[in-house]
Length: 234
Ligand SMILES: [Ca+2]
Image 1 (cartoon, helix red, strand yellow):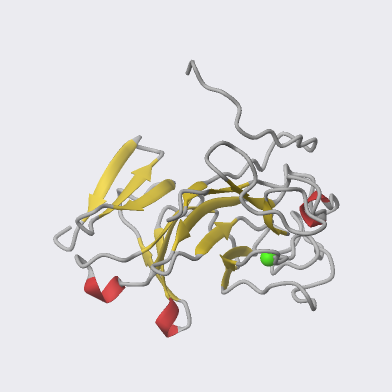
Image 2 (tube, helix red, strand yellow; image 1 turned 30 degrees about the horizontal axis):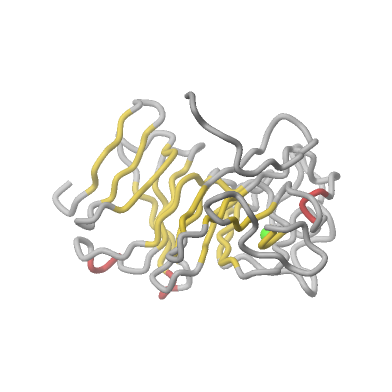
């Protein structure tokens, strides 16, 4: 790459992992980006610090200036308490959703609202690597509950909320890839987020998933280095 410039600088200081990240363009042209906790959890509390960049959703204008500024928050911080979101998308109404990695279990699907706290590392449905409770347990007043969580972890990556006509029975369903178990997860919000796991020789370590204009679903398998197109005929 050449000729690029820095639009936003985060000043993250944690470890060398959990970087997120996904970028989502909103209908008004602003941009949401997810940041990881940089691997300092569950002891590090950067995700809970509204003045820090780690473990957040950041909301920016296209020139890198903050599109949201909340009282007591670093300019641009839109929501906090995230661990490592590697999937994010908008629903049909323009709301931001994301999937984020838990530790040993506790991956989450969250619907994001400005100023809300999504809990990491104070609450989680997972446990620490090798066992042991994370934070205070699974719930706390003032912290959001995930709409769905995975135990054990699937390591979700990439995300769409299907809006096309090619699979009418899937409209409104949430899709994310699994990095550790080689399938695509389909969650049906109208049925308690019941999950179907779509698996085949093509769904190895699915890193990204997008919906095309014709309603077909494209996904990227890291093992093969191949982008596949999913249609009702196979
Ligand atoms: Ca959470």
